[in-house]
Image (cartoon, rainbow, N blue to C red; front, side, top):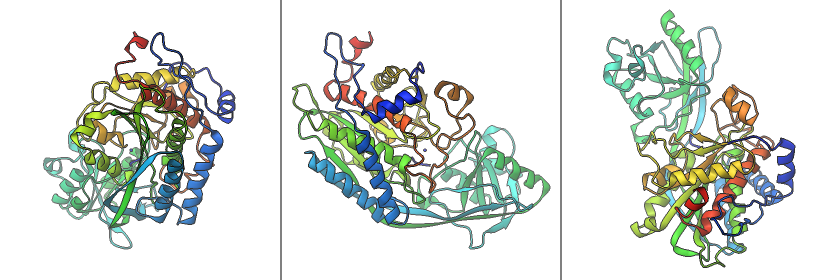
Length: 485
């Protein structure tokens, strides 16, 4: 995921494990009144595990990752495409250029020698080798001013040659580092205003002027104390950025009505820092296995819609693959796209069960999901309820591949298990797990491996996705009204 749910809890972890080991055979909860129950093709736990093991072995053989623009990603595409072609899908590789970046070094040292964490923003400028030693200066005032989004925020602030400290929110990282640079700052650190680490990117790599990174709320408080005491800190933020080429893998069902297309997608790439099993191998494996299962009988009914499965590249570098796909669609193809279903990090160890919030405004585009997105969210919520679980609307924070479809006005829904954010006590009471801990403590790290992901989370999300995909494979938006009436 770019660095970016339930009603009643009745099924026990043991029951979920048995269900997963026995294969997922999910019955649609959304069959219209009078229609016989639809049973999706089973998802094999053994095959899902096989896909994940293969992704991990590919990463291990190629420097520990499957990032776009690397051999690890290329072999992930080869493996996935071979299986899809064998199942009868027509496949297409969409190549596109992008700016590859990976972290070389990130370190923050306070005067007392302590080293609280710092995360370099994607596409950030680098500090000199050996780091930058300077005094931090905190931008104070009201909430808006502390965010450092406008030049006036630095009025009276001694920023020249210092490390500016601002709060998250209010504007993009591009704007924060531009305004800080204009004020003469040597670097800028953005402190989270909620629990957890702060993983950020510059939207425009060309806009990078000074080093920028994110820290936790607590580290922000420590830096503010250093600023008040007039003490210096040492900041090292170094990364490699260069132009490379990558690709999407698109699979189209051989049958189904092309006048109404259902697109499902998950990014196939990892970050350069790890093998990316939960982020986003589990989602890609579930998507792949769903496609293979659908190939067995999809298109044998007159009402079947055309299915498209997108395995996106360069999500971790700015949601680039899904945006390239949407940009490549003709107006006619966009109009034929009935909806998009997104899968993101659905195997988080300390998982949540989130659906894309159809009522939220996306912070990047300023848009809300298109009409019909509320129906998709309701179908996903009902699919969790059918498993005895309650789902919650998840953050529409612009950090996953649904953004391109939302921007194109295509009805959109999705599933998300959580990443670096901390689970709340209320969520722990609802889903289990540990409050105050990240949903995925291995997010964007080398430990994001098969041994860490939650099979229970993958089962619950996989069931919900398979149920809703099967429903929309033969129904259009609006045809579920009778079911919910």
